[in-house]
Length: 244
Length: 104
Picture 1 (cartoon, rainbow over the protein chains, first blue to last red):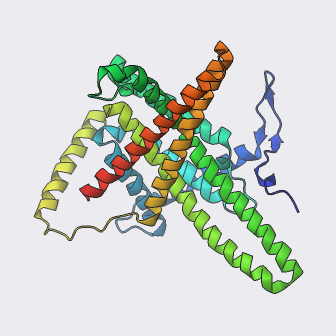
Picture 2 (cartoon, rainbow over the protein chains, first blue to last red; picture 1 turned 45 degrees about the vertical axis):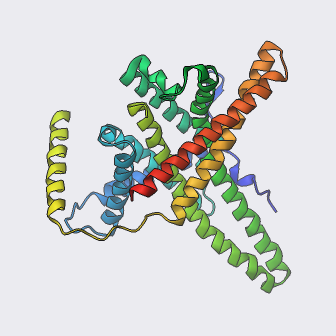
């Protein structure tokens, strides 16, 4: 039986190298493109008819739009409106990456820390730049809680700085760990189905039932994690725009 | 259509919506949304926040030790600072959850 971790190996499809750096087109890039393509196809097809009474596709689209719209409104307020397209694109990309990754044989690019950290580092740097541009040096008051005694500054400021810099780490690790653990779990239980089922058909039914339940759970986690990722981006954006 | 005009239109629409909502008879309060899924989301956030704080603290301490050659004091101090930072993130999340609960 193949290793449970084999599903995460990155295989180059079109090897490329620029200046000694390996920039091959891999299965990870392929599934990212597929995910982006499916999102685009869904959005374009769903907004074609623009019916007053939406069809199924348009309803699904409007629902997702409203979810992200409400998320931005509740967490950032009306000043977050310019950032809605980015949050929506981010949410859709991760959501579809997670969901497409659950299809047997597909590659889950969100199960790689390199991918999730690249996204969260981009958000972190972007949000910090937005904060500095909007507030100038006043932005750094974020690192000193309002109303705290000045004597506590030498202790509080390092804590706040660590807390600020731990954001991209927790943001990326959360998504990566959830997806990796889920896929390993599916593979382990799937292996159990084959091992027990080939021994005798009846005991194989038990892990199979379990596998079905876990697949449902993973479906839920795929959606929740995309949602959490997007909502935390909103929270960080809010901090940068309004400095709590 | 420029940006200012879009914002104006949004604001006018918001005002009209507000007026229309005022005319509508009061609805029963909506039951809390999310339930188990939202709870799981918050749980996942809290755990990783705590671990990331400690992890980053240890990382910074380790790097400082290696740089300044004072092992193990930097690691010790920054692990504690990182733990406090992670704890503060958790407390903030909890406060936020409390606030949104009382608002509904």
